[in-house]
Length: 233
Image (cartoon, rainbow, N blue to C red):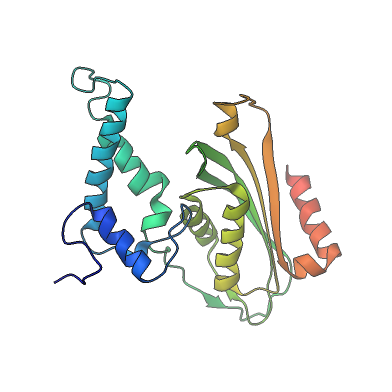
C-alpha cells in the first residue's frame, strides 16, 4: 500500500515528485533524482514523456499519423531525453574503484581533454565541449582510473544545466572521490542556443574554470596548470 502522500493513480512523474517533496529534496534540472525512482518507473517515465511529446507535436500542427518521418518521433525523443542526454538525472553515479596513494604522489596531474556533451537548461539546446582536470594529490588521496574521470564527467554533464554550474558539480564529485590537496577544472564549450537561435553566432565559445584548495591559494601552481593547457591547445 502506498504512503498517503503518494498518489495511487496518475502519471509516474507525480509519484516521484511526491517522494521528493516529502523528503524536501530539490529536483532542479541538473539534480540527480535516482534515489527516488522505484523499479519499473523508468519505463513509466518513457511512456509518459512519449505521450506528452506527442501532444507537443500535435500542438505544432504536425500530422504524425500520415507523415512517416515523424510517426515515431515522440518515442524517439522520449528515449533520447530519459536514457541518453538527460541520463545523469535518473541513474546512480558510475562505480569508481579507488586506490590508496601508496607512493605518496604529490606532483601535478592533468587529465584531458575530455569530450563532454550537455544541454542548456534554458532552451534544451546542446552544449558541446572539452574538459580538463588538474589534480594535486597528497598521501591521503585516492587514485582512480583514467577512464573514471570521463565516466564521472559524463554522469554530471548528462543533465540540462548551465556551464557554470556543471563544472562546479564535476569539481564537487572529484573532491569527494579523490580528496586531493587541490583541484582545477577548466571547460571550453560551444552553446547551440547561440548557434541555432537568437544571435546565431557560430564562433563564440565559453571558457570557465573552478579552482579548489592549493590551486586557489597557490598562484604558481595555478599558472603552471593553465600554461600547460595553453601549450597543448
